[in-house]
Image 1: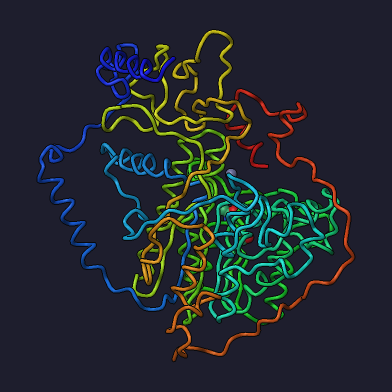
Image 2 (image 1 turned 45 degrees about the vertical axis):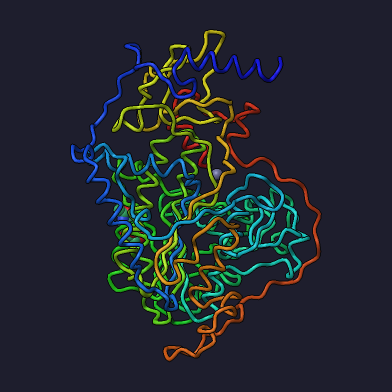
Length: 587
Ligand SMILES: *[C@@H]1O[C@H](CO)[C@@H](O)[C@H](O)[C@H]1NC(C)=O
Ligand SMILES: [Zn+2]
């Protein structure tokens, strides 16, 4: 076909439909009717939008002069908090309060500065949480699946990672080296990729306990597991140099198989060591105030009179989804409560601190095509930001929120304002079958079409229950990450550094520059002036240096996730019960 006849054909179709691209019929009677909450009446006046814009201009013209050196830095990470997750999350929050919702603002959305970060890693177009954690905590891009080592280390290559020249330091280590305190808070296992980026050097993110290493035929003496590094290596053990906080899930990598933990789950260590007892023993020997807690009641009690060192591990595996914990009414702290506890302990250090706070399970919900849970976890993260914002004034404390990578959830259709964000679109497919406002390009929510066309998911018996999977285009046991950029929100000293579109690996350098930490402090004159508050720096030598060990042969590890076994048929995941699948995929 000649190009001009193509143009002609397009024009004819466009005439027939009005606007070929945007013309949509009024929703047919067959379209499922979602609840819709209308917007407020004042939005119909131009003056409403003028006033909104004028307020914004005034706020931008007279920014507070936050040009001091940041004493404290809190980095919030929404694991998998893609840009398309932001608008649905704020809409859900507004709708839960009985409003149309789209106009709502989450805590980090009020930050004055935003930017965009590029998330690819050295060997992959679309990254995972390990190479991105290395980028946003150590300031260097590296290989998919590797943590705290340069891209000279291929994934699973223990030998290559024994070369200390490949090891990277995180902004947490830079803070500790400056005599500040450090903390990590997460809703995942504390040994999971994102938090481990703050303290581990590992050729594989999966080497969380010595059992994982042995399963991969790697010698734990050559390449210590991630839990061991947290307790016994730099900078994890330096989380004892001054106040430190470690809060999250994942007791199992710290306890031996022979021990049942506080909630009757067995540990996973094969070397017989109990790293929680080692952590306590080190601090008891040093004679410093410390507390280990495993439930919310004890956490809140511990911070009434904050100890210098706080370790809280609230689950054997990941912590529960916020919605699960609320429904079960059990004794797990919220992310906001953990954040406040961490700030109360770390604030004992007058020199300041670096705190990493991760909402780690937005990612898990997306992988299972569960938008309701992904949005709910995002709101829990926003609550944590709100708590920190109230406790830490912008003149002294830099708050930054970002994501490690995107996901493939789409927010689509032409629904009326205020339509239930979790419901079906007002629109309907050209095949006459409804579709959801939130769906995915891939994942376990794929429904087999069996020659009868697209499945009408609104007929599912558990339609729109919290554990109901929305639909996906391509079948995959776990939905994939996305390769698009992620948002960065910042407020506090040097907030203007965070504007623009840049490599994700710039983030720790930007934060460190604002706080006079790490290598980027050399670029700022104020950082070399002695601070009157400077107290003697604590000892920085690792208490147990790593032993040099002979190199070991390496085999690729067996699949660790149940979903991989599900493909080979050896995993008994009940196909109809999504909540049960959740439990399995959390392994
Ligand atoms: C919380 O932990 C403390 C200390 O181990 C324990 O005594 C208490 O029973 C726990 N509370 C709950 C609700 O499990
Ligand atoms: Zn993920």
